Length: 298
Image (tube, rainbow, N blue to C red; front, top):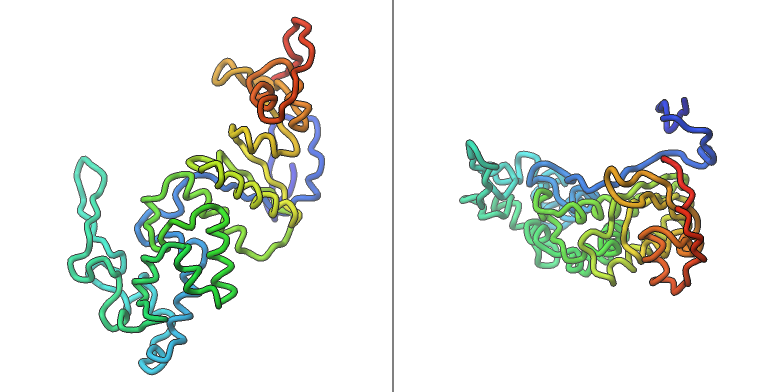
């Protein structure tokens, strides 16, 4: 039994665990949704929205009217549209189908009432900010370091095209995972964290994969450890250590085919992963002796 971050865990069968003293906590960044309702979005999940609300509350118009940060929350009474309760959408329950969401007839999707919408920051209402893409929001708020840093983290994971208020249920699994990663990057670095990512390159262009790799390297430079379940050849080639399980999937897998740095795994004459790595790294295969590769059950 081992203790980690105040919890106790009985691990499965193993011979030993080395290096556990270097890990303070484990964060599993999977592709599950960041929220279950339209209230949850990239801005709320990353903490961007708290900074935006404080910024709007500091404007001259808001101070004259006595509007505090709570006035600009779509989760609290006072500033939100009460017809849709700040969601911008109203839900229609379907008996045998998923619920249907339609634009609120009163606020027309703005989420807030007229008094709240009359408060402007550089010509933008609080609803306008929710409709900005991350890239646009960064340009608007780049003079505010804390806010700009969180938006920069979203850009760094290739999500500059998302709108701040995009409902969580409309995000793909890969997008949700990268929002979670951006939220971690925006937090103060403490070191000693083990990040576990499951297929983070899902839906990414090659240029965005390269950007993601720089991001993961930044995490490791801060003293963290990153464990990735991934099949993208560029990610595998950039890894410090590869554990290749196979030789096939499902019932035909589960064996340890190869383990080691990418160059060492690429030199293995057996398996699909070594073949892919040889193409990426331009490495010739090792000599074949006709015998199956040494492997054991994981």
